[in-house]
Image (tube, rainbow, N blue to C red; front, side, top):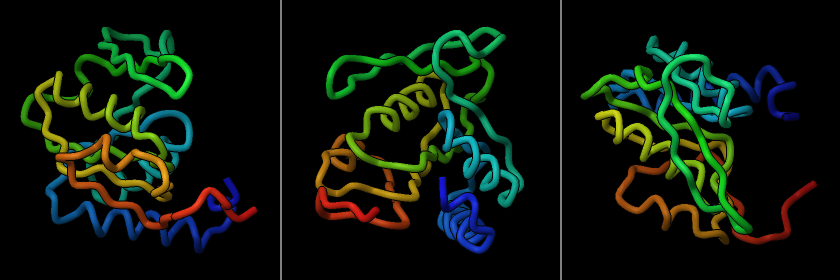
Length: 154
């Protein structure tokens, strides 16, 4: 959250994520609540494309599809409006943090179930000591910052 309070840092993230995504011909950016909405919406705006929101159960008003995914100690669910991704749409999946990869993988699966194509998965921060990238094998994954040890700053 401190990143979002710094105008220069926020702008840098939006521009860096957008520069990576732009050559991929993105039609829609998909972000999950809550921090994924902030940068995901800004990246969609910068690219001039639409934004789709993956949410926790019960928060979306229209017809939706669900994807359950594993957490370290249980499971969780994301939902997406059934018409949020059109067949053939080129989708950038975005989130603030890549850790175990469960949330990102669930978003990729939602996109593919609706007939979209995941053209990239972009993060601000990646914890490389966790298996997130391996869980996303087969997808084009990018992160702006990586941490290689569990001793994180702050």
